[in-house]
Length: 549
View 1 (cartoon, rainbow, N blue to C red):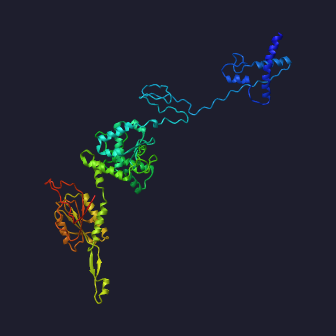
View 2 (cartoon, one colour; view 1 turned 90 degrees about the vertical axis):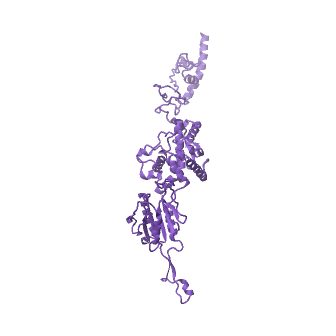
View 3 (tube, rainbow, N blue to C red; view 1 turned 60 degrees about the vertical axis):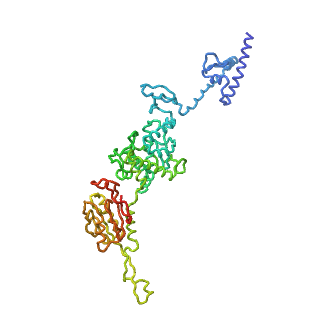
């Protein structure tokens, strides 16, 4: 018994020492836990410490605590000191985005399949767009799709196969991958910005149609035309930009599809607003506000190459792989040359564009006015000697009065072709030109006379108002009689202006005055129903010719 008590006292002494130190630390305000308490609390549900009874939890009493109570009982002093309970450690901070999203929905299976958030889905499966995402986590962007360059180039080859005359322009485009572009877009420097997600979801045939659509914006100079329209009308807002883009698409989409090139889904047509096909971008902008479709087409964006307004994603004029102005003009010329080489295989819109590319439209009203002013201001026109103001040279010849040379406004006689081959619209244009001619000679209407002529010439009627002129005709055409009537009128005109379609015989000798011919355009052949091989004579070389319209 003595040996047992000594052993118990020794064991208790060791426990008392450790617990006394812990008690002293607790009384001093030290919040550190004892070794036994830390071991018990830190183990959680793990293995018990040496001073912990087997089978007890984290709140079990250590042997040293039991020994301390025993010593107090033996000494007769009951020490009731609360044992500090270990506080559980705070839980670790919850990381943002740690919540698992709901499992994606496998399309066509009718049930949900638990897949990791980043796991690849089967080829025929899509993630549900309504699946909840962790707080702060980005939605699964389509930009994660890599650009399928092989598919994109295959679509361009298909476009070249079905539209061979556009091959030079299609291969001149430089591809720029940009995930901020909605679909495909072009800039004025012939860069094509491509969205990888758009390429992934489009079939190759429809993607070829998008290629042709985008390059058509550049060939038809929608960039320069849109910028010019915005500057003239002061329309620079996002809504006005969208209107110009829609109008440019109307001009393109009405005739570029078909014959092996399907129309892509979402392509806008003029029939959507009840408009006539075959018009230009400027005509669509003038005839329609397009307010009925701007809300539905807010996603439409073909880049600055379609409307002339720069985008944030574009590289600009200083970026790489851009074509210079000379290179762009060379591409347009070669495409127009290819269209002219095979006119039977191209739509009407492309043939019209090719004609304008070879022969750009000229401001014929300005040219006609300049020709009339040049003829009226030529030497010898409207000059006459008068004694109202003596010549300054009279001082050199004493006793002799020399006349001075005075310039008077020239007299102009307008010969209008009123044959059956001239339409009413062209006659209306001729009357407008008569009013313009009167302004060109200083507003002196008394100096302008008008002769209507078909196979025979009428009387030279003085001009009072252009609206009051009576044009008589409707038969054949022989302007020689009109020239003869104009030269016989008194006073004789200084300038003769002939407005005709050119299907007429011309005088064999030049008249003794300046001559300007305003020519209404006509086909080269087919001027006479009785003689299919008839070819009208071209205007003579002694006349200044200006094509009207």
